[in-house]
Length: 142
Image (cartoon, rainbow, N blue to C red; front, side):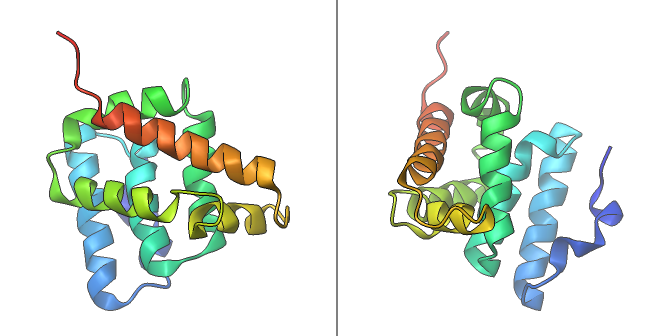
């Protein structure tokens, strides 16, 4: 299992105060979930907003596209943690940064993949994040 201590680059590129927020977010998720992989969408949402690296946007896209059955499964795994303030903050950042084709998130994914202004790729990014957000906010039946 990957732990925060195993990944010293987590704080790389952040201001000191924000590095502490990311560290606390990682620790909250690891403590609650005993694993971090499917929760990288939260850490990535925080990272992208505050570091604005193309790779941070791509990491979010990659997790939502490739983890399990995609955004629905990631949302189901994350839903129990949505009362955590750090998770709510990350979800709000995702909502703002990946809302439409011209938003920073989809553009950064395209830049990371050297895809320029590929509208199909950017639409896929917006669609995956939107699907994830809709699912994570959907009331659980039962």
